[in-house]
Length: 294
Image (tube, rainbow, N blue to C red):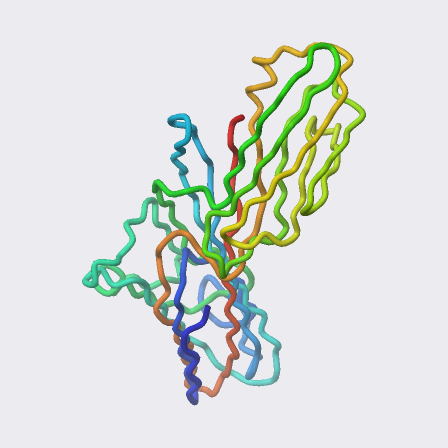
């Protein structure tokens, strides 16, 4: 969430409590090499959307996973243009290494508009944004953490007749956060039919085109656990080993939440000609390649 929002003439400063890597979508003109055009805006609205992608899970032991996470943060800004001139310079600062909270990043990449003279010493970058959408910064982070949404699936097969699933979904993030648009995709035998579902939360549907059924939960608060049951008829026996190789997939979105640990301490927008911007900031964590083998 935004912890501080200060307005000044010619400059804006925003302090954040959460953070992640950065993308920018900024509509404006200037005469910089990577952003041709002419300045035509005096006042506009900037929407910053910070996204972290919770990544792939690999099974290590019976109940332990090591995720490799590819994080991205998208800052979207739409500028409404009026007749004016100007060239905003933006400065962004991340966690201070001296405070012992700096996040060690891998494969850090910046757009060519970024000035890096203060990044190593102060974790600060400055830039003049180009037109359109561009990737300001990207990185990769490897860490051992709990999956944000943990899935357990029990499968009981009855020879030549039916297969039954019991699915447990558990949210492993703070109670004040809520995962939206959660989809748990569970594979079923290729010749399964006559689906029946029972769940007190959400809805389930059979998706034969992908060989799975999908359990959808529109709103999943942190610290909760839900159960659902599914029943399918089986006209024949399926090779259990082959079916067991198909993983369960999870899709979700958690607003105002990031998992990378990198924090944006502040963002300043400075324009000497009087250019003004109204920043709106939103943090979002989404699933990346998020799979758990049954």
